[in-house]
Image (cartoon, rainbow, N blue to C red):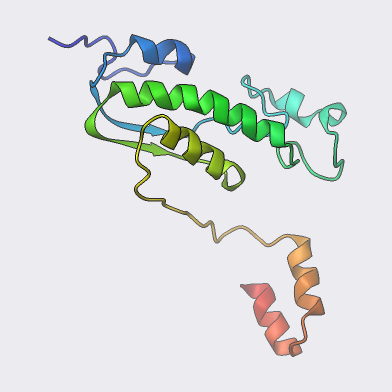
Length: 157
């Protein structure tokens, strides 16, 4: 009989400590939205720390989490490779692994999952249409060589 200590329970734990406790080939589906290791979004997700202006460097005009740092992607890859290896171990043959990602780090996530032994079969991309465009989009539209009517229509979409 399989160990049921994780069945039908919500468990808050460090993933790298929890996954080794789960029996090999015992899980049908894994669905996860991992932290993305973006600038100043640490494992504690401390809002005060993230919002602190003293922690925002490199490009001051960008909010925390929007700065580009290649080391963030490398740290995310190394961490997610360990996670993916454990998930590969606990999934039943033919099981599914779904993982969310930020667009900026998708390639690191996919590489870690692939390097852990999974076959990447499909990618689902979601678009959020309710978000208003950034100011630079309006600037771009303004500079386009199109009529005013077309510019107004572009701003509404």
